[in-house]
Image 1 (cartoon, rainbow, N blue to C red):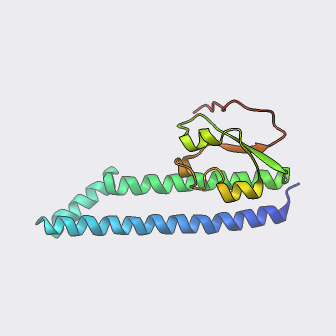
Image 2: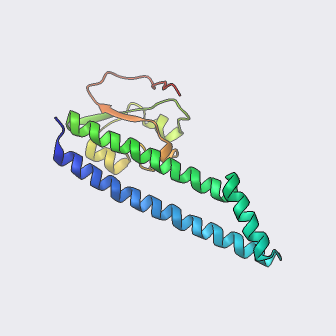
Length: 160
């Protein structure tokens, strides 16, 4: 049976984190659009040409809007996986210590260095949990924290 207090606290925290991440991505998108419009205007492009360029970028997933879509997608995927982690912890309970398990799908050097390290939950939160942006791979992270009792692991090869 899930621990409702852990579940509620974890989900509330995840909602707050997702709001911050999405707000930041929206702000970066606004800055990117402003830079593009200002630079194209200074180069002599008319507003109609700029509008057409931006519409083409939007429909074709170009440099500006494609990057924005990918960042939102990564944030959503990371949030779903962090929410899954919260559910799993509320179901299993809090263990004394957790071992970082690297998953070999585009694994970043930060995650490979963390593989096998053991810390308390509070220490991992301070150091950086998987998918929280504290590693090079940010929300793309596929690693997991497993209870320390889990035997020593080789990095996990996850099928795509």
